[in-house]
Image 1 (cartoon, rainbow, N blue to C red):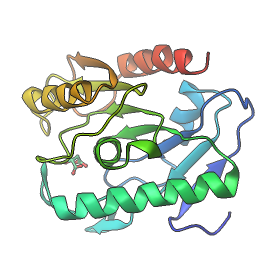
Image 2 (cartoon, rainbow, N blue to C red; image 1 turned 90 degrees about the vertical axis):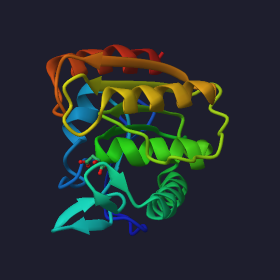
Image 3 (cartoon, helix red, strand yellow; image 1 turned 135 degrees about the vertical axis):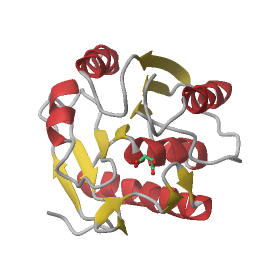
Image 4 (cartoon, rainbow, N blue to C red; image 1 turned 60 degrees about the horizontal axis):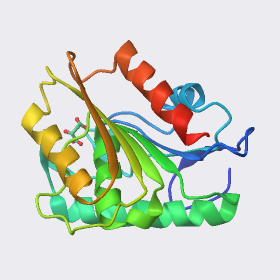
Length: 205
Ligand code: MLT
């Protein structure tokens, strides 16, 4: 594997017309977690899957938190920029277009922060169980970027009000947002998969 600034897995595209995916795992995951999901939702896409650099009790994450759902926002900013720099490095090394992020939980939150702080790093994002990563984010121009958000009505970590606020702020930044709230918790369901399959099918056209 090419030496870049994050430990990562890379799978080249077998269908070059399909967009590359940036796979971002949840707390306690690693660079292998979302490979199968990425292959399923966007068959043939190149897959770029870094491992978060923060360790919380041995569990990899993409930024520090002070408590569950309470973020160290200075670190969120630093890590979102660091990850955007990695994406730029990997695009050069592997010859990729800007990827679509596919993030779960902590990975969705860092993807949302990247959209706000480094909008050029991503072509769009599928955010599974995401919450507002920064209380006071700069206003980005997300014109032309598609964002799928799938939230859980009974998610014990993310109040519905919070995910609605994130969807609203991405829409205000002119992203093309589809926000679905399912009668489920923090874990992924079959319906998440169906929504992603539909949403990613459009991005391959
Ligand atoms: C976070 O820390 O990003 C959220 O609380 C979600 C999680 O990773 O548990």
